[in-house]
Image (spheres, rainbow, N blue to C red):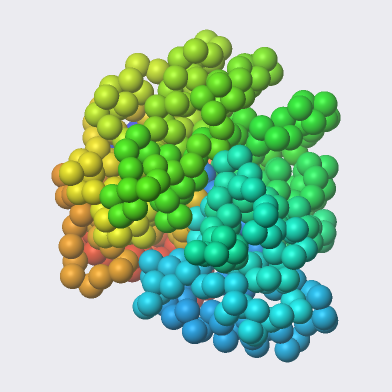
Length: 529
């Protein structure tokens, strides 16, 4: 038997302002949309539930096109410094944690960001040594392309003045060549190799916590990249299998990191109806915060560097070629313009099969010529609108204002006809899709209260921003024919808000509350009133 949804603002997203009076869904699918009276007359023998929305607004279920589900869950259960604005508070929190740990236990913190600290300090290992000489300490920067560790962690990782920078990584040193504890990109792996791995129980807890938080934010699914970081592919796959088989319906699309793609291809893998696998994930560069995003020009605030290439041009091309040997698409992390250019070169030399398209993730620092090239290729851009709110204004100092015209250029990308999907990159940014939508339409920074709009010509409409998290996310994984709209034959996944988000002033968007999250025609979250 089925469900009739009615009594609210039901936006189908087939086109802007397209609304219907009612929706009839059954067995996880939308059977018909139209007038309330017509659907009642046609399906009255099949309707077992009548859901009156009482004036609320229902849209297709929101899907985050790029995040790290386990990482988001870990952030919720670990030390979280993503909202901290004082470096002394970080130090005190770590000091307090040492009082409750057995000797030698690791202290791991998430989400610090020097750009939001009052003193903009990058904490030195000596400061950590003073409060925790016997506990290894590892603090992950919000971008996850840098960590700070203390001397105990450096010792366990055998990092000293004599240690060479690994390919694609930097061990930051002081004037005496002594490591400061600040490790960038691939240099992090030296510590990760000796840090404790999460148990299966840890992974299950993190996943359950993460998915339940997604429901509260109105998310019905996500495209996630987790399979290479938690002590083995089998353990991580088993954690996903256990969680998704518990009745937590969440449309989970998993990318496959290139480091485990060979092993992955040998596995029998089936995560059921709510789990599927996608492209091979590759990192082409790092992040802007640590100046490891790969640019074609020197950083404006540090002309001694242009960033870090995780792979040489030849290595990157060979990785794309390997994906093609497995008939896989690629999903490539590219933040800097040179990383983007190298990736386009690799894709042009090794195109995907007919009907496939590749995904370039982030695409923040671009040039007009690169946008023109991208238009001609079967690619989709996974963009994170929230980066505007968290990267401005400091990113202008890093890149230089004269180079910013084609950067964070969401409006240009959309209007040029490049398919775009919207994600958060959680835990790097908050997972709430409304924050991403708000950032796309306001382009205001979280670091000032002036209301400054950065490059207003790149603002999206609310409708365009919502499309990123619905139709865009569906297109990214070839589900544009059954997800992303409220339409006959599509999945019965809905997000319900307490108000009409399309009729709000942009500044009031964040006042909207998620009232219901429905997946497969089943309530996964209802706001308690």
